[in-house]
Image 1 (cartoon, rainbow, N blue to C red):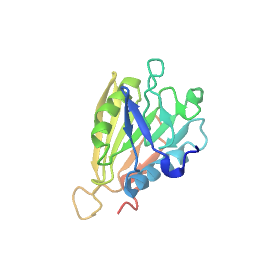
Image 2: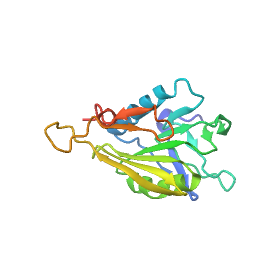
Image 3: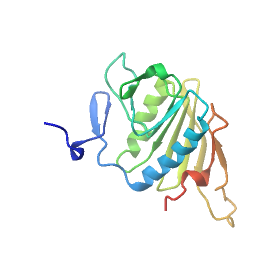
Image 4: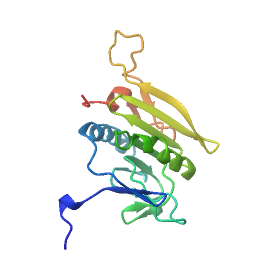
Length: 185
């Protein structure tokens, strides 16, 4: 019997446990991902690297088992690691956008997975709080290097909407903090 569109379920498998990622997160989650994806994709225009948004499984240790996660945004430069609907390699950059159902896993298990896999830059983005945490891999461990909460009011001393954020390994890929959260509210 063919699978119906309504039967589709997005899942992740971590340590042998399958997590149902359906139903999809709210629209703010998708807007934030689209904003970041658009900036990264534009910056990779003349590159062999590719960026994926919520549509590619990441098999983080295929030599051990068939566990996989589906990052919200994943930048890969080793095209040989692309196989069917999955990537078997080390991404250069990953973003997880928090939702109530996945926030704890994104900040713990998945952060640890990306750290152990050697992903050099990991962003945790919260559409609800308009916040971004940026981790860099340093000596095999993630270090929180930047943490922002968007302040759009120019009259406030902590105004930061025009703060430019760049990817560490791709400094030409830049976005203002306010661009990440554009049209979220």
